[in-house]
Length: 287
Image 1 (cartoon, rainbow, N blue to C red):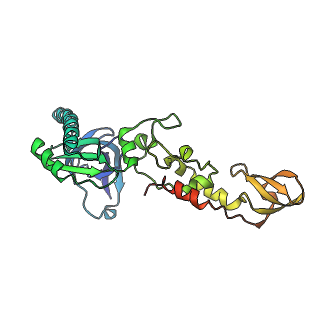
Image 2 (cartoon, rainbow, N blue to C red):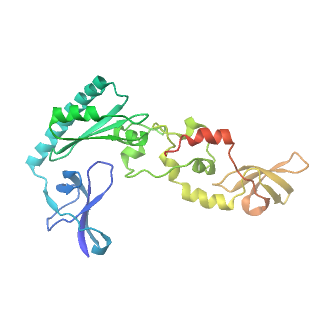
Image 3 (cartoon, rainbow, N blue to C red):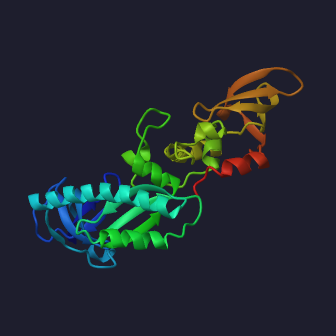
């Protein structure tokens, strides 16, 4: 067993593990560590964890030091450099006439690299732009094209629920979200109702999906033929959460409300989506 600490380099981002190297490190401390991108400063979010050393394929890198006042000065200086780099890069993009939207700039702690994040509708030939930026800043330059979900995570904002975006508030990694989830949760398949500010399906569709999948297995779908105490009929509406069904009885206009446990399924409905409707909704999924 070995002691490890968990470090985040963004307020809502992936947790990376390091060897505390005998240092007395507390939660929320800032530490200087070596990463694949170079030397970085991150916030400690997990401490005093013991894990079987065999679970790590490669040895964990040790913490270099707990951040000092001098390190905090470096961080502030890098933030100012990021702001300047953002404005200069926007000017260079306009100069080269590139169809790309600059989203954010990151400067590594040791100033060895500048990362520029952008969105674009198609591939962009930014080789000349990179040369210009390298000549301007005299450091390694990396341009990284990101998707619309990553853009929303970086920029932040308020969702239709009135809360800050989940992705910028607590979601460390994006989870796959599909049209099937919206349909199984009996949500309106109107794109404006089930898509977030990023234009993709809302991340919150994933939160209750496991529960809905269990309920969906035991609840007759709308259109199913069932046998009730009143006779045979067709399910017009099914409430997954309450288990109540509205059933129209055959050969009459009677509509009764029954519990799903009191009916026998004779023929299950397919629950398919119209092909044209599905084609449009499929665009909301993040590919």
